Length: 585
Image 1 (cartoon, rainbow, N blue to C red):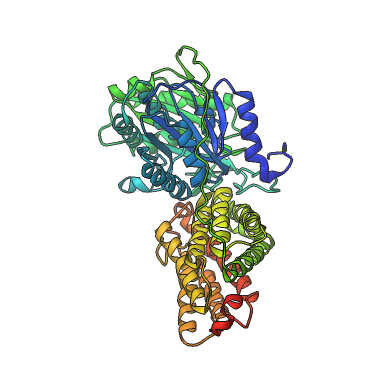
Image 2: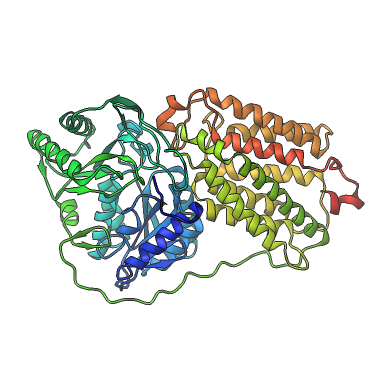
């Protein structure tokens, strides 16, 4: 387990700072990640990779000539926030456009997607290629649903080499798409990994057993098997990957044996030797293989095998030189250092002086967020344990990071003499929540809190109807962004009953407090009922059987928050009289 740290919550940031200090000839720190510290030719496509921390040398270790132009770096096993991706890509852009590439995880898709929209809106042409190499996470006919694991390296390497060779954005994207389609990976684990500061691993493998089909975020595998010999393990991995080969596969392959954290090089080499013999016996030629730690998962005891079926063009770019802190191939001429310009500062849109009613509501919003923080802190460990059953175990700590940042931002916004409108308070809080928490929940909660604030605006008075508008906006932001449906086993399964119950009760004449109480009860009942569902979205989807019998952590956290908000809502919040509206709504 990880033992060297001061505050576990600062682990990812401090590790990244140290990585930059040790590699200043390659990378420079920017807000949200790292970019190349050396000159980049004008007009070159910027390959921006990224994801959660804890996977070194992915992702920051792959930044340098011939490979990535920059890496957006999230917290431990959590995607970087949209703002981080935006700032990193803006700093990396050299005028040739941006290609975003990352593993196919819900939080990364949300945050990188938001950043892509913003970059394109500003005239920086930006595309995305998802890495979907893990054969255990979906069948071949649903390849677009597969998650990205060690196949990140093949996609990043070939796309980076194409950019270095001067191909335009169309050309780099085309090669990245083809590389991804022709890449297959499968992983195994012998024991789980432990997040910094945690006292237990995210999952455990029974003695004498091996977990098959694991991810790289601390997710357990999809099945357990008796511990094989090295020869049996090589046979298992090779057989399953060859059975899943692309339709246009040739006979030349890159083979990558990737250690996930604690399986040491001697063991990896031993296994690689057996794998190579099997590949040769299958009529394949192994081209420029890799064997070592390339995409890790903290201290996980495990490994993966990746195969990339080459064609002439892909082989050219796989063999091209690269020079990064963690991956070097061939020889490249030294590059001069460059001056980096910071990304444009964020602009606050709500600069108007708040009305008395809006300022009062802003203070109430900050107080309500403090209640949300208290309930998250109270249940942080419980939510983490629940998430670890079929996920990566970070839901509790992610919610904690997000709400801590949201409260700090809300209090800062409301601290000036005139106060701040509810719109300003909640927008600041939502942006901070998304930025600090990362992951799927960070994107969803941040966007929803912002939407709630925007629905309130900066008006002269408010009524109970505004509470209904806030709830509708909050729910709408999550359903539109997350694309989840009822029954998918997500927060939506508790969110929609909450909204529908509130609106029905309020429209029927109940006060806001009464409607909230009924809605919170409905949310809790619906959250508990998710134990009967199989997940159809997110990281838990490949582990549906493990999830059965346990409620969804996102639904439970929402239900807990709804109950706390209901308990601390002023019972006077009925349909207020006009003269009272400013203070009571």
